[in-house]
Length: 432
Image: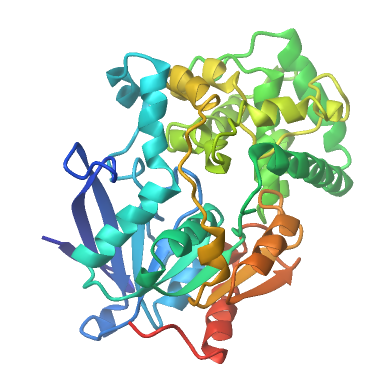
């Protein structure tokens, strides 16, 4: 039974359903899948089209709402009921955390378990929710970042459940391996670093000084982890978001404390711990490379291997380059919240039995209207790969812009408004 309540501007119903852990063995172990239904309280009795939000990630739970929610939600609630789904393993959907890993005897067993949390299983969960909770009619989807990857899997495996799809910064390369992705990503991250240092030229010296201090001293974060230069570099993951440069600038602006600025401040260390820990979303680090797993090609720690091709990212180079959306094997040693996943992630890196996530033939014949914004300077999802995908998926309208960073849909309601308008102008969503 749904739990219903109202917060300012939003009527909310919380839904929980059981689903198979392994959709190929529906009679086996089950997990729980959580979804939050949101609508305008004034329209609570109206029959409105459903818009399922496919969160970024991997390992992303749905947004937790306050103050009206993100701009796209306010826009969507003018015309839709919005379904916010916690992807399996996140939030209230049988959350995976360190303690979960205690059940496995070895890394291979853990890896086999973790592969059940990829896009194919998430799409099956969405279909289960659509059919059992939301009446079985077609729904529309909004896929942000990794949610766009999920959209392509959805169109490959269950297009009959979809009436229209909106994708924001998330058209994955259909045949791109992890190596392909990181070979495109590192140069783009270097460009973001260069732009950052142009905006804040004095930060080059300050960030170098921070790295020198970390290298020369045993620096402990508030949770007891030792801070290394390579962990400090990972704060650059924020560079791909609209407020990223400012977030990092103000962090390093207050890095030092004491009469002679001779030690790192408590504020700085607490912030770095928060930025580089994964207590809230360990699957983001754990599954990051496996989302690119294709057929029998292991990912084999692609980010670490490809980094060796880019010596400018070395910890002793100056200006110090910060890294982006890359996960490295040492993180599962150095970061407390990831240590329990070490054996499983190590086995995942050698995994060779990936279920195909995309069906090129089915995508080439796609009839579901899809509109996608491609961010020209996106640090995480390569625009070139996205455009290539748009050419190989039928019924896709691509809007390419450099007006926004990767989080454009979270910054402006205009992004979703335009995507919905583009579908409407071509005849609208398919009938339910």
